[in-house]
Image 1 (cartoon, rainbow, N blue to C red):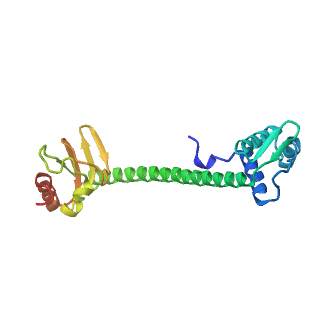
Image 2: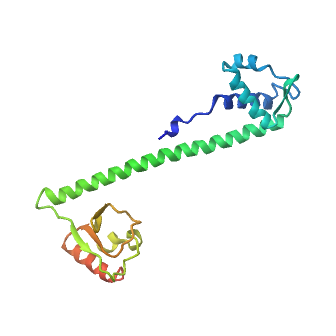
Image 3: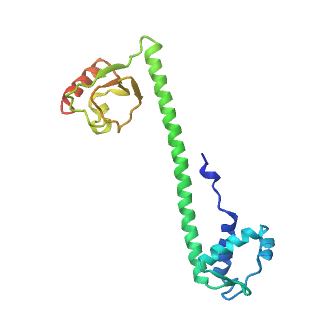
Length: 211
């Protein structure tokens, strides 16, 4: 996978932007015949092919015209300004895409850390000290009013005091399901809490938040 930070602007595009900036600023006037490709390639320290590609872009954008005999002629300062603006817009989008890529990486890393921490919590409750409260597995009744509703929507902790550390779906364990998880038939919920919390959670599964 290519990292967003590895994405760079091609050299020929940078040259096209630089020439447009010089035209837009007036340092190169409309009607001016630009230097030949070999001279420009020396000036920018690139190959003539790179210059050709840069000029092709400017020609497509109608900033310059290329004709046999007359060479490369600047035709429009206005088009040069428009090209620079469009390039800046594209750069802003690319910046946002790179930022989004970094955020996705951070989120993935955070989710992995949450999962690992939750597993450690379960290990502590299950295998280590016997005086710690162990997680309790409670099945969701088939006619439970919570089915189809999310943990956040139901405000489970607020209504019961229970901390949900996992959901068992047949042989699968979903760790730290989060507020958007919707309860389904056959779910078995792993919660942590004292005896009163467990009782409230059982009533909550049978009767919903109103009770």
